[in-house]
Image 1 (cartoon, rainbow, N blue to C red):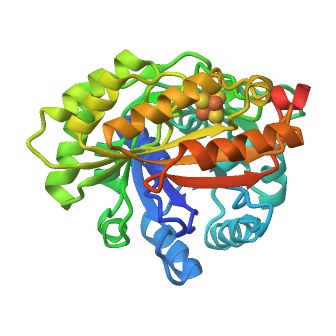
Image 2 (image 1 turned 180 degrees about the vertical axis):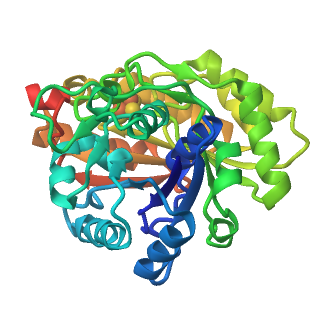
Length: 384
Ligand code: SF4
């Protein structure tokens, strides 16, 4: 089939994000022999015109629209992306009468509501690769794809949904093949890399484990290193961001990934954006440094044991203190993110966290503080 995939995420803050997920879907579809065009709207001017031109050129038999975030998750200055999504969906509708399929992280949070709001035909709930292949097979044979795991039809009755799941690839060859990475390089954005899916933790507010499962599915460390080398060689990119749920858990796998990357004859600037204090060791941090990690982002959320326990973080204050000390000793720069107002929070626990920030973190650390926790369907927080 001829398929047009569109990345609708145009947010540039804190930096533009190359569309890893939809590139993986494009690669999976191409492997099945489909003719795939990926339109990346991140830097686009004249979205309507670009969508119309892409439809004209590719003559798609279905269009996939990937939606990353519903809003900017800011209580202080909220901004919803729904209006932009509606405009892009309308452009698709004006340009083509082919089925419109929604996918991406935002869709997995509210598939039915988005289907109705954007007037699309189908939504993919969960990981897109295999679901898109099966959906194409169904559409190609004139079958209603409602039976495909993870595919939600606008006409189907409401009921429990099974998220689509698939294998894991670092996604780098897919990005190279389908996305122009140069504008991202010029914007100073790192290239996203994925080494695993799923999460064994059970943080009260998080949808990851229910969507991706509570066991880790991992990519081959050698494939991760080869992908990084290929992108570095052909684009000049040196900055890569590991977007895994938890880069350092399981510890042994993180160590294998670091070892594989350390063998590359390239000087890299790596960022681990999901670093849990529950699984930290001086040995791993040393390996991360050797591989080229300079920065990590960790979300302890609180430094108070009652809150950490109520939030289901899987570590306590002592583990957090140890992790902070080890990160400092390893000489890695870190951003620590805290959420006030979660379950179990009192004035005393909030004060304890503020004191921790003041006493244990240094000028080298960046601290991000947010207030309020969103309650997503299907999370432990919803059941509290
Ligand atoms: S460790 Fe991260 S991905 Fe895993 S459940 Fe907690 S917040 Fe979600």
